[in-house]
Image (cartoon, rainbow, N blue to C red; front, top):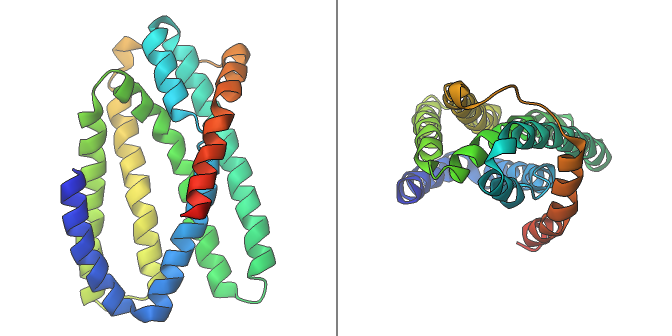
Length: 214
């Protein structure tokens, strides 16, 4: 999967860079990088902690997944709100840049579906995640080529990158729903929420530091 994405992504990426030109392609990368910083925050560093909980305490999987989903949703709200504040401060005089950042920033909310990925990784079934992400990547890569040949503007490519995450989220949630025979009703546990946050915040700081310096 990584090799495929690297190979196809490099070809389409170079083609897209030449098509958009330095200014538009630079703006696209800026938007992706800026939103990526807030996207990292919205993850709250939960991934390894949640997977560990699912492996060590499978009997509480409904509470762990339900709680993690709520935390990721709250993290997405906080991250997107902070992004909006920053965008309106830094880009108060550029409506177009403000619009595309706000639109692309919606990608943050679709990462709530990561809890489904956590479950499959805990069950050593990462192939399900790889397949769904591969399908989304392939479809969007084909559309990028079509849009380049159609001489589409920058905003279309912003929507395409957003669409990749949306499609991947929809597919992984659909696959997860098919596992319903393994679950009862998902619910939230405040003790588990406290435990997850207490253990994940050092990872969050590390992730944000790595993202900022890279």
